[in-house]
Image (tube, rainbow, N blue to C red):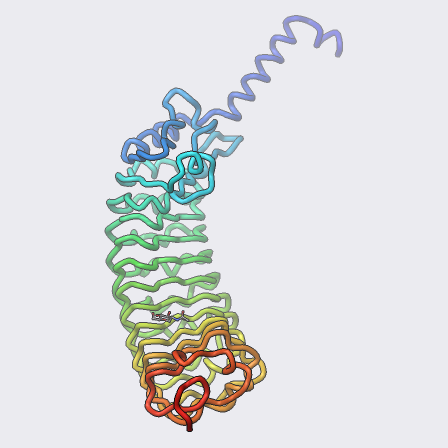
Amino acid sequence: MTKLLASPLSSLLLAVAFISVITVVRSCSPTDQTALNAFKSSLSEPNLGIFNTWSENTDCCKGWYGISCDPDSGRVTDISLRGESEDAIFQKAGRSGYMSGSIDPAVCGLSALTSFVLADWKGISGEIPPCVTSLASLRILDLAGNRITGEIPTDIGKLTKLGVLNLAENRMSGEIPSSLTSLSELKHLELTENGISGEIPADFGSLKMLSRALLGRNELTGSLPESMSGMDRLADLDLSRNHIEGPIPEWVGNMKVLSLLNLDCNSLTGTIPGSLLSNSGYGVLNLSRNALEGSIPDVFGSTTYFVALDLSHNNLAGRIPDSLSSAKFVGHLDISNNKLCGPIPTGSPFDHLEATSFSANECLCGGPLMKAC
Ligand SMILES: *[C@@H]1O[C@H](CO)[C@@H](O)[C@H](O)[C@H]1NC(C)=O
């Protein structure tokens, strides 16, 4: 063996084999490199010079900012470009990023892509190329914080491995495509601050893995679909600043892990279901600026725990329930701008609250208000 290795010819062969293995392992797939070059040429990033690291005659898997490859295949697996970052390149420039241009459909040629993040660049416009739905390995699609227009691709449901879809803070329009509810792996859905209209799909509850649905600041209409009652992993639901109407369904209060519910600034009517306020798992419940009526259900107890409970700007009438004073903790309470009447109860949750929490009601008295009962 030693003799064999020592022979000049076999050493040479070994060396060649070794070098070619290294090369095969590390080099960027030529088709991926071509796709990235086309992707880059549709974008302009004037402040930081991140695309200077993407030089044509270097290997895209080595030192291209924001690019990661599979070491075995040399296929590009990640594009990770965020305009707000702590990276050295940002620190050195002392500013956050700005990028303009659009997303070139050439990106769809990166068929091994698992993560496509092009977020918080403020200036990227144009539409999402519909062909992104052919990126079958995609787990993360994050294009938040740009000026992207157009609609969510109709066949987004083809991305069966998608876990994160974040298109927040863009200028997207159209409806939530019906195929979206077949994304069985989806955990985070963020569409906040766009112009998305239409109703929440009736089978939204098929998104069994979903833990965050942030859909606030859109133009959504209709009511909460009943299928959502079975979403056992949904922890954060933000539908604030839409046009959701009808009564708040009783089942919302029975959702297993829901801990943030923002329904503020909608057109909700009817009374507040007792289940919603007796549920001890809510951190934040904001029902402000709707048309809710009736009295505040008298269902609070020693397990009641709210970081923030905002029921302001509704038509709630009657007295503040005495049971609220037995709550374990209420950090922030706002019941101002309603039609409440009677004395403000005493007790721990009320001790630290200011008059603004109770202002502009019909005839509340006592507590921090300058009005004796
Ligand atoms: C509740 O929503 C209203 C209206 O959108 C907002 O002004 C208020 O700050 C929110 N309350 C809390 C506690 O976040």
